Image 1 (cartoon, rainbow, N blue to C red):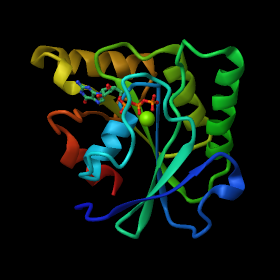
Image 2 (image 1 turned 90 degrees about the horizontal axis):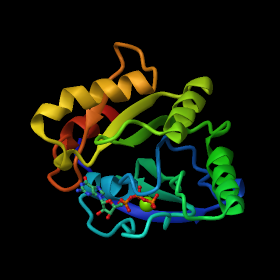
Image 3 (image 1 turned 30 degrees about the vertical axis):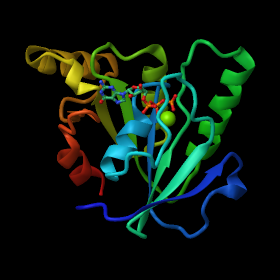
Image 4 (image 1 turned 60 degrees about the horizontal axis):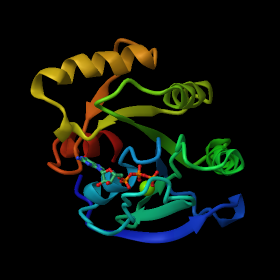
Length: 190
Ligand code: GTP
Ligand code: MG
């Protein structure tokens, strides 16, 4: 499916700011700096729909984008950024959790992990949380352009093992730079 139109709708913190039109939502979650905003820009063929930053932790709100006047892509604040206060971390956690808890229109959660590294404790917690609440999840390994060819299957295996994923569950690799993996990812979420 091609994305022809993508519009920013709202930056929300509180539940009453979320869209109320019951369209299906696809949420993107992952550590700060993992490449969530870059991935959304790439999928929507827009260079600046979402702000991409060299300093991690820039996305502190929940951003809703209306795609093809049909569904929402939801960009969540990244977790696990070390250089913020404990209080701020808790605050982010609350923002993410408030959205993910009991969100009826939420149809799928795309969990982004860095394809170069073993998933962190935060990644594992996030994955377990998603599973516990019984959401559909798709794990995507980002920054594929930084991997050597011969590292691909090995790293997928590490990600699957670390997150304790089922054998039949897929990890998809993606690069916002080269766009490799884009068509496959699109076909799985929309
Ligand atoms: P927060 O909003 O802080 O949670 O970060 P984010 O997950 O939205 O990450 P963002 O898209 O802002 O990207 C973070 C950094 O990684 C930027 O410097 C991007 O240019 C870089 N980056 C993102 N995707 C890729 C990729 O596929 N390949 C490479 N090489 N760099 C990438
Ligand atoms: Mg971001």
